[in-house]
Amino acid sequence: MTDSPRFIHSPRLIRLGDALELAAAADLASKRRRPARRLARGRLAAAALALAVVAPGAAVATTKLIGSGEVAAGLPAGTLSLAGTEPACTVVEQDVEYHCVLAKAPAPEVRDWQGTVEPTVDATRHVNGGCRSLAGDGTVWECYLGQAAVDQRIIGGGLLGEYAPTPGVG
Image (tube, rainbow, N blue to C red):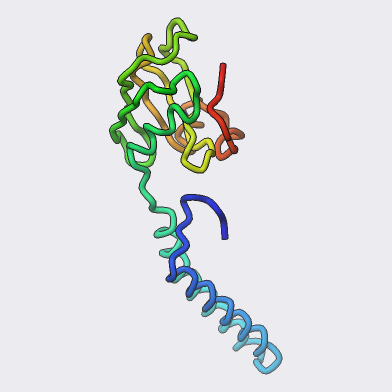
């Protein structure tokens, strides 16, 4: 599987993987005994079963909702200038867009923060999105996760998912 935080290792998915592995092994073992037409039907049935079981399982595995607290923590984790700013975020569109307000202005390294873009970093220290400042004092931000951050031209596609052990500087 994957170590991605969006993947849930549930007992149901583990059982599903084991069942699919056994079905594939049984199908391979019976190849020598089946006529070609029965073999094709067996493969079709196995594929249909796998799709019927895996598709909902994959949907469940990727539905971990990102909370506004996680997004708020991601701002200073991505940029050192935002350390100690105490962001509070609200959901605009779940798992896509968040509106964040900082309790304290960021470090004064930037004279006018409006339009400045900064990456966000998740709890596993991977870039998961980015934010754009909506105010000159840097206290109001609009944040986007995943591909939405790339689409908004906040981060490049190559940065999404990259390991970021420490907040960015400069």
